[in-house]
Amino acid sequence: MKKCAVINDLSGFGKCSLTVSIPILSVMGSEVHPLPTAVLSNQTAYESYKSLPLTNVMDDFMDEWKKLGASFDGILTGFVIDDKQIDIINSFIDSFKGDDTVLIVDPVMADNGKLYDCYNNDMCKKIIELCYKADVITPNLSELAVIAGEKYSEDYDTILSYGRKLISNGIKSIVVTGYKSNDTISNIVFEGDTVHKVTSSLIGGYFSGTGDITASVIMGGILRGQGLFDSVRLASEFITKSITHTQSKNANDGIEFERYLEDLLL
Image (cartoon, one colour):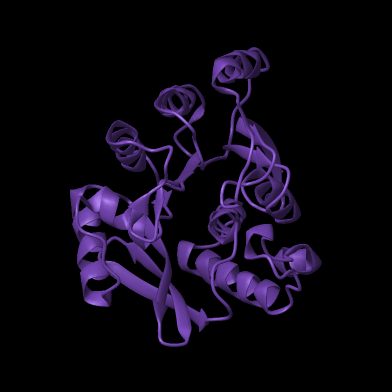
């Protein structure tokens, strides 16, 4: 089995981060090795939450993994709570990323045109530097604008210009998530000079964890030999089907993806 390190938080309620990455990557044929950044009572979109940061033990965990002689075919990074954690992730990449290791960075730092409360400009700069090390980044529209150093926009041509700017500046591949137009939602894939759009029907509004699901399916697809575009298409189909049959009335709970995990099997 391929081995994938996932650096993200663990939330007790609100299906996202590690609680979606572990089952998805596992069913897609990868052995998952979580390095938690924090343990949360529930994900941060709920009215309130409690968080236990794990910044002070992440280095110790890494040291133990080094003793085990750990190596990884994939590294997937997500939500961090302070700038020290970004430094630790950089150190992790320096220690564990081999020549053939796939690095996917989900630059979780903004939404709806605004930075998350726990982020500041210094943290954003470090996340941007991390993006330039990645093989694939998966920003939403807000994060794309931050990384490009531009104003937030929902205009398709502007989004294309931001993506192309980042590719020309050295970002390897980009999957821009959550572009909405009329009754559709799309992921826009930038690979070199090529741009593809994967479009699905727009069902409902906001749902927790869909970005984490997208990044996880993309990683799972790449690790088993699929191309980036095919992996993005698989993620889009999986999320659309899961949302269609989600019964929860609280979008913060996430989507009922578990019943369709078999769709991710080869």
